[in-house]
Image (cartoon, rainbow, N blue to C red; front, side, top):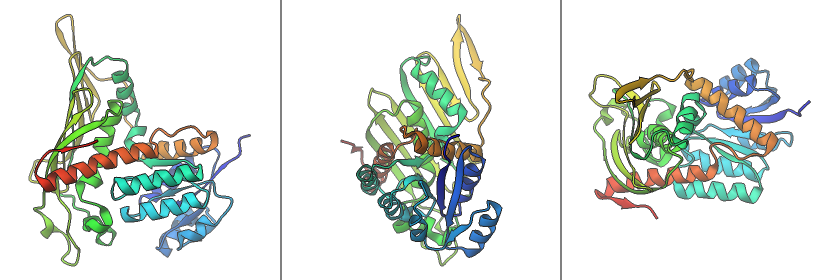
Length: 341
């Protein structure tokens, strides 16, 4: 019988779904939880029968029996808490975005290497069945030469007005929908394509709806952005994101264009032709809900701790996605194309 992987969860916002995933996973024991909210500690501690409950995450990290922790905190806390956990000898699953910028993410990766521990980034879309199916189909060459991809995550009205206002404070969040929503679809698209290097970025960002948040909230981020990226190998990627914009409805989607076939998420559809006839295919892949994808993600983290295999979303690729997001912000600020490397 395999020894149980013993975990702790720091942050009981999104971290509640980490708890649900760990509770459903095989051979995993939830040893401790940490959050500033005593009410959440009591309710979630009781729900999952977790004895060790802390308002100070540092006390959680002192428990020698913990193998790994998940960090599900506001963005500005990702770097310091992750590095503290690594120094304490814990493997870490850190929520997206990895950090406020690529420099911080690189420091986290360096700390993981020094500690000899796993650093995994929680980009849950990688753990969806339909995303992995599409990635595998791209790898087989079914789409031929891919020359264009598009991705978007746009909301009609969805500025986060919770979390004590940190979402709209650039010093604490790192940015607006680019870093909050864009990280999901850009990472998912690059993952499907085999993670080609982004060579150049041209972007624009806007702030038009700051009046929609409570007056005591700082609003120092964008609420709408677009970008055009040149990828190694010649393909290009277009991207759009918003927290608020005047459109019929919000949506999240990815599109892939190759010279032999194309595809779209969500839902998953493949467009090709056979004997001169246009064909639309709907692969019989069960769609993965976002909570299910988080459960698969945390179970994978536990498996990586148990087997020491490399995670599907490793820390070094977290640095790469932050380099792309940094370039988008820089290009939008300068009003010109920005080259990477």
